[in-house]
Image 1 (cartoon, rainbow over the protein chains, first blue to last red):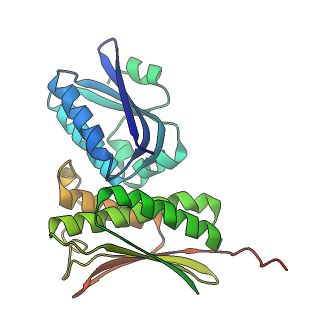
Image 2 (image 1 turned 60 degrees about the horizontal axis):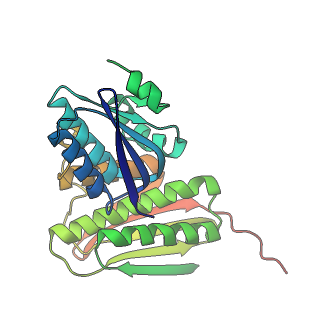
Length: 113
Length: 145
């Protein structure tokens, strides 16, 4: 299973829908996508992880890197995830305090700080 | 004591194979279904770390994974061939240092995930390389007549 990525714009937010496995092999693809979006001026990102089957620390590193990039432009990076096995990884690494995690794309798009 | 051994070239694309093999052997060994996700993740982390260490140090030798099925436990040992203290003992976890293209940071985060997931884990390093040993309780199904 490879990684699938698609993006769409909702208002001033860019939703990145991720599917498949984010690991040491596929994470560079996600990194490139996030870097490209920020370089093109999309600073408010919503990463939809509902179709992600697997996430490891390499993937977490890429998401933290994305957060650093958007923050440099006073942007935001929100996650959408309801899957317990994915949420668990954010919990044990303490990253639930770093990322706003939403239960739906609608909720994430509507959210303001 | 049944053993499955896997050796793979230190390439990121093979880490998934190691995860799949480990999960299959763990299931066979009688590891709880609920714990299989943890096994998969922990093995992936250990293998990603080993692949990274081999890449950084230009080591062409393969990464070695040994899966051992005992009566009461299932254990996995992931070995790299990077001699010395290795990355395992270097520095403390520093959230600020964790970022993209930060090999040390990702290494730390990988170990953080492993120690958060696995109760019985041992990280050692010696002259011939480092190894991460992890184990889980297993209850093999009774052999049918």
